Length: 447
Image (tube, rainbow, N blue to C red; front, side, top):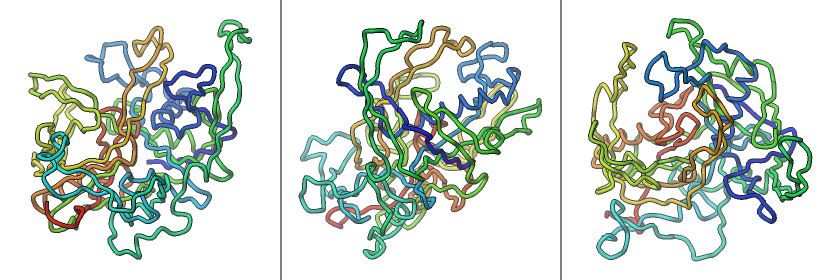
């Protein structure tokens, strides 16, 4: 994947779905969601017109090749954005089990039968308790560097868990919030409508800080499906500009590297302790929708929300399978599943999940995509990055299989692309990236 660095040329505006009227500022200074940057890259590819209309990709809802609905640049996959400091270090959202000034977790599952003595609902079996000192102040900072993140996941020695200078930041240390008053504009005359006034907040990055993203396309340029081209690399072979967020705000963009080792932290694939305890930490938000029961194929109902759709609600059984994926068929059918359908003997036993983040947007009119009038996109409640899910496996081999299917990099140590995106929706836009580590009960004992 291409590593892109975006530098804002002005303040940025990333409004969410909340009202922006009167004293309500719309929360436009928040760090952008992955959907925002993915949309910005789509727009940049369309403006560059690197493909003709005859190269449009069919949409997922298109049943036949004769259907007029199509999506150009449909092969685009992205991840990010993440803050990048002047030295080129990438930073990622803090895991929620960190509450102190070190990389040692302060929030941990507690051993014991919590289902029989509390209101904890299945499939969870253990409550999360604070092993640190009681305090109303949160000492841990919001962002960790990739090096610090990997030590948090892989180290247990106290000297390795100490934070070093420049390894953790809060938002206010690399960005500022600027507030302004705006006026309503009549869309027909492009002049003040004489009625509406609003307040807005804008995000300004500090000097030399960047937004780091990963992106690539795999577009078929001829009738041969084996001949594909990465148009992101072609678009930014020279430094350029993209429009990111609302109000047509501009960022300069350049490729830092292509087809090289990615800056995302790597998770564990072995050494999960004698009890085979695996924890999965989200690097980006994830969306798991409510699912109705289906009979063909037989799929049970699932409430979604905070609970991944690939975890059975009744007992927490992991429904993912390990093995190599089957090759896709091009004779009108698509092979599903894995060539070796090995179940993973692992169960979810605890979770540390914050309040959801709202993912929404506004779609412009687009005849070919079936939106002749445009309008609001579907609103989803996503689990925030930093959420922690705790699993217990039966053997070391099962723990390794679980980590391989949950780590964004699988089991590879130097991947050049993203292997796993465990969000049911919007995975191609960078949702559902995670890494695995190990954990211990509080106090240290068997369950």
